[in-house]
Image 1 (cartoon, one colour):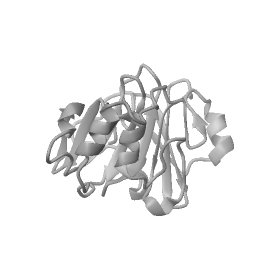
Image 2 (image 1 turned 45 degrees about the vertical axis):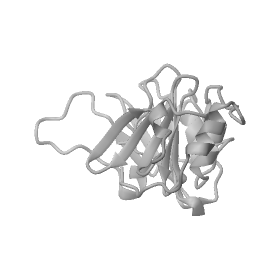
Image 3 (image 1 turned 60 degrees about the horizontal axis):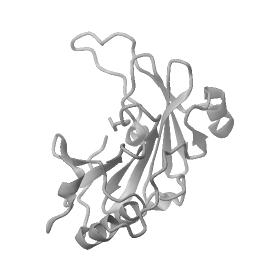
Length: 208
């Protein structure tokens, strides 16, 4: 996925308030994003968004050495998600936002991702919309179970508590909630740039 630029501002006081239990109320598992429910059949996705603009099939067999993997177009890379062999990803555009849906071998929705900037003016989730300040995520969900820092040539995994400190967050990051929830947020320039959810019991759906 495209690299973002650093988040700004200190989170320390806000996180400490969240840890004290003030305002943290979103502990139920996620079942819906962008008007689609996990477990919906492929036809339901078509009913909501129509035929996908792009379809990407995860090969059953590992590609041969030197063979180039299939990639979605640039506009869809922000919602491109790791998929299992035999799974299919559908990509849609909704104004300035993008939607990605992972369908499992039974053609049921296993994961959903949405991405876009603050100008997308779309609220695909009940607690957060694209462009919301990262503090709203912390207020609703508290500590992330995992923080992935997006910098350089990859990601640097650190446990959630390390986001608390005098330097807090100074890189773009993925805040993943996977113990009591099944949702992750990509933070870009201090705001929510991507939201994704996945079927409960699966590994968190990671951005490509």
